[in-house]
Image 1: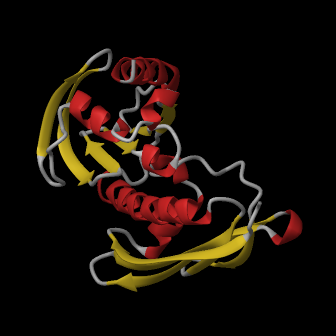
Image 2: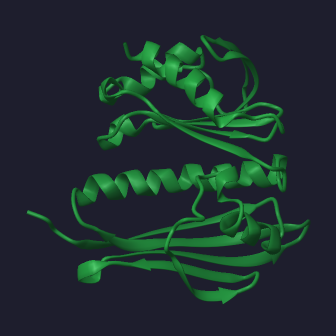
Image 3: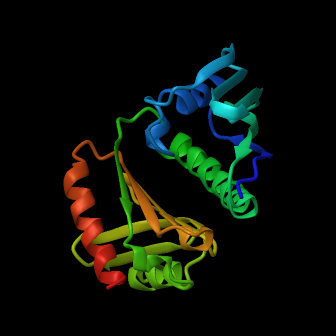
Length: 230
C-alpha cells in the first residue's frame, strides 16, 4: 500500500563564496557539483536575489518537492546557507528519507568544494551507474577496494591507477560508509554507495579540465564498474 508522507531535511553550513556566487551555483551551475537541473519543471515561488530562493515542483494528489536556500553574507567573502528540502515520499518513507538526508550532506560538501576550487570554470558532467550486482550489501566496499582507497580518510592524498581510466592523484575530500569524494587538479569524482538505499552504486564526474568528453568518460568508468562487479 502506498503511504504518502511529508518530509523535511534541514541543513546549515558555511560556504567559501559570496551569496551571489552561491546563488549562481545553485541555479545555473548545478552540473558542476550535483547534476544538471535545467530541465526541471520547478517554479521559483520566492526569488529574492541573492538571499532567498524557493523552488517548487507540484504534482498529482498533493505531491510536491521543494528546495529553499536562505543566504547570509559572512566576512571574508563567505556565506551562511540555511537549506531546507521538503516534500512527499510516496513509498518506502524511512529508506528514502535516510538516503535523501545523507545525500544532502554530500551534495552540500561538494558545493563547497566547487566554490573553493573550481568556481566559474566550465564543466563537463557525466553520470555513470553500476550494474545491478553492485546492490550487494558490500557493493560500496568493493568499489573502494578496487580504487585502492578503502581505508583513506578525508584530507588524505591518493595516487591510484584505475583500470581503463588511467592514473589519478589528488585529495580525498570526503569519505564515509556511503559516499566518497576524490578531487584532482581538474576533476571532482563523486561516488555514491546507493546499495545502502536499495539502488545500484553510482558515480558522477565533474570535469573542469577544458578537454572533458562525457561519452569517453562514461565508457571508461562504465567498463571499470562492470569489472568491479563482474
